[in-house]
Amino acid sequence: MRSLYTHTNLAPVPFQLLGRRPNLPAGPEWLFERKFDGYRAQIVSRAGMVRVFTRGHQDWTHRVPHIV
Image (cartoon, rainbow, N blue to C red; front, side, top):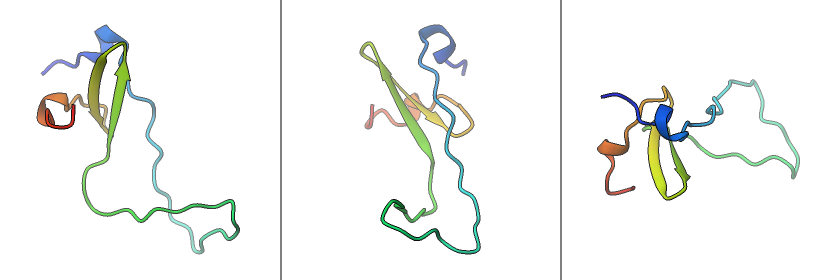
């Protein structure tokens, strides 16, 4: 399936990737979320159009119509 975001300017922004550290930073300015196994996706919405992208920038909008 050809991606639609090249024609609609609905490109995803770069994903923030997980990194390993020996210790967690301390202090009130830090916030953490536990990552569970599953899909990492990004929803992009502009001018009434919505697309869902995978971390590999594949358009998965058609796979999750219940979200869109």
